[in-house]
View 1 (cartoon, helix red, strand yellow):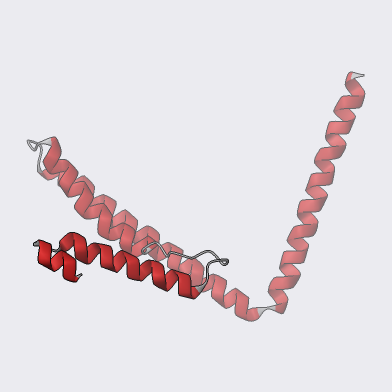
View 2 (cartoon, rainbow, N blue to C red):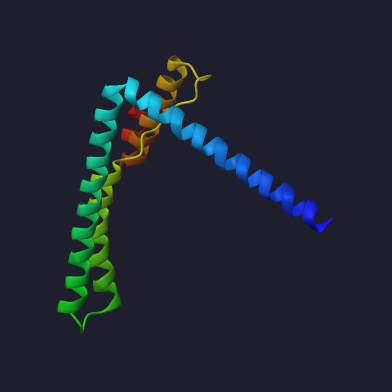
Length: 134
């Protein structure tokens, strides 16, 4: 019984390898047919390399920050780390893009935005008369 399980395991393993090889062959054929996709992929790979360089440079700045100031408080260290990481994340990742649900109409989204704007103006108003006007 042990030998049959081993044999089934080997057979499954060979099957997965064959499928992986077939997928690789299909990918190679697709890549040969689409030169534009290859150029785009190369550009994406270059962008990833630039992002890694940017991150590595920022991490080097963090290491230098910690080496230079040995007698700093934890708060100062945290501020330095935050100042180094926040712009890097914004630069590399970008800001979050909000996508609305498909089933919500544009009119409804506009009404929601108007309501939010009214609430913020009321909240930011200082006097009662300004709040009534808003």
